[in-house]
Every structure is written in structure tokens, then in C-alpha cells.
Amino acid sequence: MTSSLLHSRVAALEYWTGIVDALVKPGKGLSLESSGLSAAFRYRLIHEAEAATSLFSRHRPAVIENNLKDLCARSYWRGWSEGRPQVYLAYLRTCDDDRRRFNGTQSLATALEGRTGLLAFDEWNQEMLQTGWLPQQARLWYASIWIFTLRLPWTLGAAHFASHLIDADPASQVLLWRWVAGLHLTPKPYVAKAAEISKWSEGRYDLTGHLNESPVALTGPAIPGPRFQELPSEPSGALGESYALLVTPDDLSPEASAAGTLKPRVVLMTGFENLDKNVVFSPKVQAFVEAALADTTQRLSQHYGCPVEFLPVSENVGETVGQRLGAGGIPHLVYQQPALGPWQEMVSRLTAKDVGLKYFPLRRGWDSKLWPSATRTLLDFHEAVKPRLVKSLGKL
Image 1: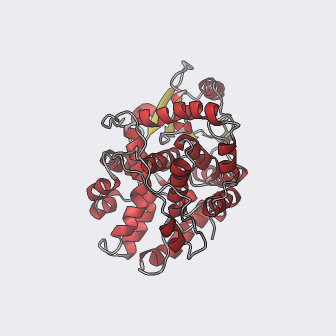
Image 2: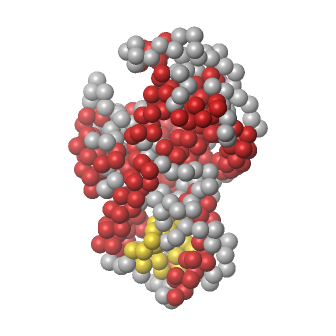
Image 3: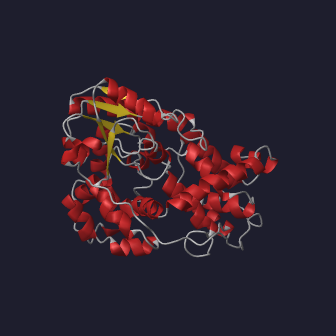
């Protein structure tokens, strides 16, 4: 089953349940990355805590440790970014500069269109454009070739992924490209080697003599230590009894969290329009998210028993929310705080406007407990997040 068929939460949960044993059994060749569920996890149609709970319910902790590492990897990238938001903001600024320098150049055009003459790179590019997905190993090699062989800015490659990969989220994609470039924590680039690509592709791709296999890592400014903003996982009594719930595509299953017990008078949902000037989302990405939003609209209407309305995204989103809720006499707005990226930037504009509302951001317990452990490398993170910790999280 492909990710495009899993824009329904019910379908994603059923599919996950059906593949749990296949994920755990060695030698089956099935991983979370290749299961078709990566987009469902990215938009949280299915949540990591739910998946972890089902793993623990059927297998011993020692058996599923590698699966839990796979499941928690996105939490590492998101947590690392949340602690250092200046890294993502610097990416946005640099991306703007690089786009002005390279837009209209032949080197960028041939890479974006898959006309470089490097068969593997060009076919991976076409696969991404046509399906909205790439195997993780191909993503790493693609990024390495883009940076060190084609000598293009890593920021534009990350933006290209963000535009076309259905499961792309800002933290994972930006930090993946930084890691390949040697900018993450250690100045060691990830190198695409012709022999490894040939072996992986069973001889289909022979890039011998065409790749830069001795690259020098890119350099950048020192990165300060992490600082996390703490948010509650449950609303306080100050929320009162009259409020709206805001739902963004960053988390499309609020009913499967502490927010599931809320009784909002209206649910407001956001989409893509005018969201991010740095990314033009492909039709594949838009189609998946729009289908997921339609599924979520139906689910939340039934769960909360109230109207579900779409909220136009704009620079004046605070005024838009204020006018809508003010007209209905609703003084408060509660929402799951989006992870670093365009939807977080959107909700940050809510507090920048004095529109007579009070805002109550929440954070899932899973994120609150795991993200602070993302201070160093992915290996260090996995050491800190032992199976007993994941098991204790329950359905958060």
C-alpha cells in the first residue's frame, strides 16, 4: 500500500496493526521507512505513541528496540530543531539568498528537472516528482551528489525535497541535508560512493568516475546549546468553557491526545494557502494533505460534535481568528503547538495581534518527554530514550 492511500486515520491505524509483526521479524525486508506510513506519521494521522503502544502489546522490549529507534528518529530531528530554532531560521534566510543567486541557472534547472546525465540521480528525481516519495538511502545519496558533485546549495536541495516529498517535514529535511553536508554536529560529510550505489541497485547505476568521493565538509557558524520552551500537555482551568480548537496539518489526530477530552464550540482547520513563500508544494503533496484534511474534518466533527470550519491562512491570521471568534462570542483558542516550520510560524502570529483573545498552546506528552533528550547525536538520543521510557508514555 502506498502512502497516498493512507490519508485516512482509520486506514493508517489498520495498516499499522497489520504490519507490526512483519516489522519485527528479521529478514523480511520491511521497515517503517518503506511501509508506506511515513506520510501518515508526518501529519500525525497516526501518532508515534500509538504505534509504540501496539509494539509493546505484542512483543518484548528487547525484540523491538530497533523498531522503536526507527519510530523515534523523527522525534530526534524535531526535538533537535525545537531546541535550536535559529538553525531553521538561518536556513530560510540562506535559502532566499541562494535562490536569488541560482534561479535561472542551467546547473540548478538540470538538477531540478533530472537532466544531469547521472542516471541514478535523474531517476531518483523523477521518482520523487512522480510519486512524492524516495527510499531513505536514495535521499542521502541524492543530497550528497547535489552538494558535492553538482556543487549546488544544500538549502535549495532541502527546499526541493520539501516541495515534492509527501512525508517531508522541515526539521527532518533541513537537518538531513545539513548532516550530509557535514554541518550538523561534526564536520564529516556523508559521501555518495559509486561502488555502494552500484551494489544497492544491483548494477543498474554505474557512476564510476562521475562522483566527488573525497569532498570537504561545508562550514558554518557554531551552534549554541539547546533551549526548550515548555508547554503543558493538558489545558488549564483558565481555558474556561467557551473556546475554539485550532487544528493544523502538523497534527491531524487531536482526538487521540489530551485534547480529545475538550468540548470546543467550533474547530478551525488550516490548509496550505499562502503558508510558506519558500516552498511551492507539489500537486502530490497538496492532494495528500487535502485528502487527509477531509478525513480529519469528518472525524473531528463526529468526535467533538461541533462545526468544523476552514481558516484562511494569511499574514493577518490573528485578525481573521479574532473576527471569527469575536462574532461568535468565543474568547479563547486552544491548539496543539506545531513543530518548527511554517505552521508554527503561523500560530506565532496569533499572539502578535491584540484581538481580545487568549491563546492556549499545548504540546503532546510524547514530544515534551522525548524532545529534551535530542541534545547531541542521534545515537546519544537513542541511548537516552530507552524502551522502558517509550513504554511509559502510553497514548500521548
